[in-house]
Image (cartoon, rainbow, N blue to C red):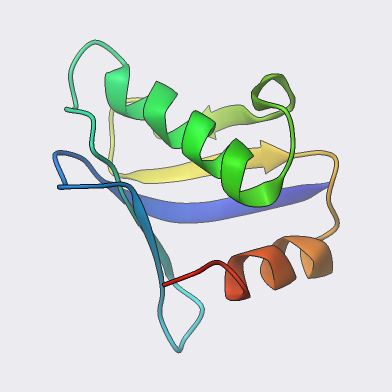
Amino acid sequence: MATLHLKAKPNARQNALELAADGALTVRLHAPAQDGKANDCLLRFLAAVLGVPRSRLTLLSGHTAPFKKVDVPDLSEAELRAALVVYPK
């Protein structure tokens, strides 16, 4: 089981991942931060990137904040980092 710590930035032109050299993860989301749309977009985007069903991802914290924790039970920490590193830029 892995926990993903990230910063979400809504209202972007398109969904995108940015992995900094220090390991910090920023996810730019096309959806607005309104009525949970950005959180739903975040979980759907991460599911597609990680290759897991959307139903397996859980937003643990950050429901109304930019800094979020997402539970990814199907992947180990190493598998999670490997999937994020190979994501197309």
